[in-house]
Image (cartoon, rainbow, N blue to C red; front, side, top):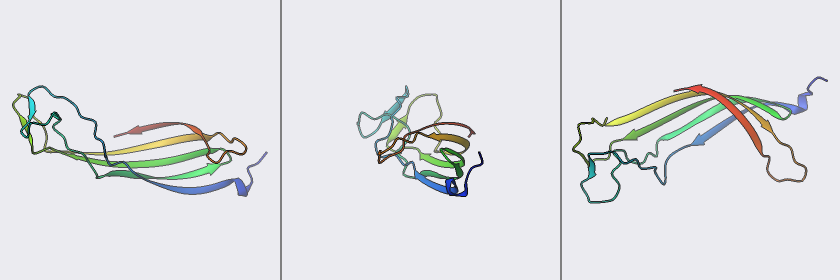
Length: 120
């Protein structure tokens, strides 16, 4: 049957994606001038996040999402390799997502499964 007005709505979602515990990548020829074990050429980023605008129909949600992130070069890292490391990296991403909310009676949270397609 038709979807009633009570079970449909628009929504906005905001998110923060900054790193607190960064994922370090070892790059040959990159060493840390301060003698630390970390040899990643990039620093943690606290500038990352995004938002989405969506529509909910019963247990199905569809949204359009935009994300932004920025990484900067770690000034304590010395590059002795022939590989150039950029001073910064900025990424913009866009996605279209579909979610199915799994309604379980008497459960304080709603688990869901989702799929999305996007580009950066």
